[in-house]
Image (cartoon, rainbow, N blue to C red; front, top):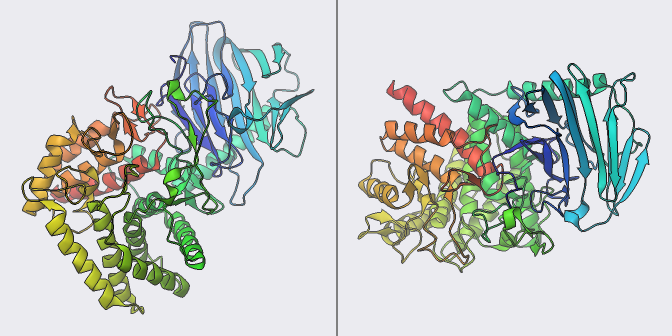
Amino acid sequence: MDSYPAVEDHGLIGDLQTAALITKDGTLDWFCAPRFDSPSIFGGLLDRHRGGHFQVSPEGVDYTSKQLYLPGTPILITRFLSADGVGELVDFMPVAGDRATDHHRLVRMLRVVRGSMRFLVDCRPRFNYGRDPHELEVHPAGTVFRSPGLSLTLSTVRYADQLEQNERRRSEEGVCVVVTLDEGEAGGVILETDSPEPPRSYSPEEAREMLEQTRDFWRRWLSRSHYTGRWREMVERSAMTLKLMTYAPTGALIAAPTAGLPERVGGERNWDYRYTWIRDASFSVHALLSLGFTEEAWQYQHWVDDRIRDAEASGVPLQIMYRVDGSPDLTEEVLDHLEGYRGSAPVRIGNGAANQLQLDIYGEMLNAAYLGNDHGLKDSHEGWRNLVGILDWLCAHWDQPEDGIWETRSGRQDFTYGRLMSWVALDRAIRLAHRHGRPADVARWTQARDRIYEQIMTRGYDPRRRAFVQHYGTHLLDASLLAMPSLGFVAPTDPMWQTTLRAIDAELVSDSLVYRYDPAATADGLSGRESTFTMCTFWYVQALAESGRLDDAQLTFEKMLTYSSQVGLYSEEIAPTGEQAGNLPQAFSHLSLISTAANLDRLLDARG
């Protein structure tokens, strides 16, 4: 199990249709194609022996490695430092465009900046999560791996007059080459999925042109950001990470590009997050609009409108998540042949929570529409009519047990957060109807909104605990309720909220890190404990700041920044040892970082 890298020892690259993870030792151990939610080609992250990998690292020498991004881009640089030389590996994916394609390129460029260094280049794909066989075709300039459903072409990058100093090793599993480079020399490889051409030799100048085009695309995109606050570097890295996790053909934002990374090593809380949650994508609108990225927010609104229209046409409620192309089939299955990250089984693909009832998604969706409207993103007539249908459905169905934001698998409850977000949905819809004179049964909506408010205040608040609770009939706390003041449901100075925040301080906060809830006391249908939840910690920062504890908020935020990976990425959770846990990178985490930084900047500026 020690052969598995730490979760945080990965960098992310991508082309806006799929993505890859690369470790600090230069091993590509996660890559799915042609889409984020496609089967893996390299899946060593979930099984070092059966999953497949593509390693590019020094051989025969002791070395240390460092990772960084080329500033203003997601171009990943891995530096190898030894007594005999210093080498650099540059990994990137040229942008694939906004039309779905099976053809993707991944460029891996090597150069030696001091001394001399031998590199091991070991490419061993395992198609379809290691379930499909493949054939190997060797060409003068590279190799083609052919599986029943996909091909992978490996081409070389070298100067025309560069001497061949390679030791070739071939096996049935893949291709392995040992390359020696001296100071100033460069070389590399280019991977292509479903390439229409055979392998060929690329010149370093051609590879350099691809790099410059990729660099220029990302720097142009990032130049649209309006953020100039205190934490610009972390905010911009988070924005690029979210953009990398956006499927350009539809505008859908995935929750994470990985599957099966455990919330606790050895536990069963291992989920597939390569899909688009209505909730996550709704949160993205607030974060992206705060930075000035209105085009991405507009694409999301179109994606949601399409899902609402599909649900209306089929006569079924909105699902909580979909595939990146909008299809609803996310059947969950277990890959028994994979051992899981550090032995954390089962490895699941698909997501059985897709058909859960989670009432909070309607509040997040309407809040996003309301914020978009404030920034000039207006609904069409058809879009408004679809929203009216959703709100009328919610009026009839809000008062029932549900599965909740945390997707527990222990049965439904009357979750307070679900009621809170139902209130938000109706409140924002009423405001939009009045603002634009849109037709709707506003009287019915208002009556339902007010009933929800009274119900939360009488059943969602425990007067003995002096706190809002996870669900009706319990005394347990839940960090999702940290959003109450920012959503306008309760004033941050309200005594009922102040005592709630102090209760969360005492029970869910551990040295500034926040648990979603106490799994030892909360029956969530799963064994084992989980780690602190990164998004909840950022929500806690906002709640502290809005409640007048601005110094505490700033210190907690600064502490949280120390838990990022070396290249500024956050997974879903932070383990008690300080390591990152769960799928990486996590949209929730980066979205909440952006929103929290913007709000904290505003409040600190106001105090100043």
